[in-house]
Length: 195
Image (tube, rainbow, N blue to C red; front, side, top):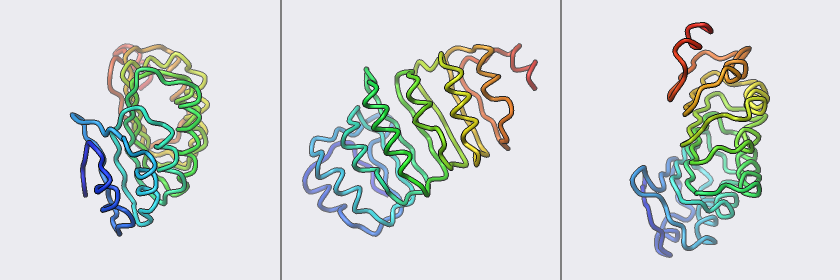
């Protein structure tokens, strides 16, 4: 495993085509800043044996979309931090994630709450989902419900929210999951009424 937070031509050239199964780019305290965008996505795309990929990066959806498209990875941990997440960014994320047909585990974290985040997850064949969002209030409960109900293979679900609303529980009802983890500000009284 290799962990970095800044890129250089030598880094991407060294990693290009390696027979590695796990790659971590950036970490909690230091996000990856991609300056050499074309080298970045060409390098990641060349890692055909990659199974587990962890990325902590600042907002750069264009490079990320190209880097992730069609990878044969099983596990993806994706944390993308940007102050404004536009519709085109969400569409890029959705296209990239939906192209990962072998993916079973998805951990996704962003720093804004947008309805498109739930749309990006719709119909995935994943078994485990960990959704984290700074400021996640799940204002669009109907979209949350539609996305979660479309995950027909889901077995494990972990969601963190900043504000609780009764509609969130309706979004979780009827899911055929084996494990549920909740973090953040979920109302104790509402939890007790549903379990």
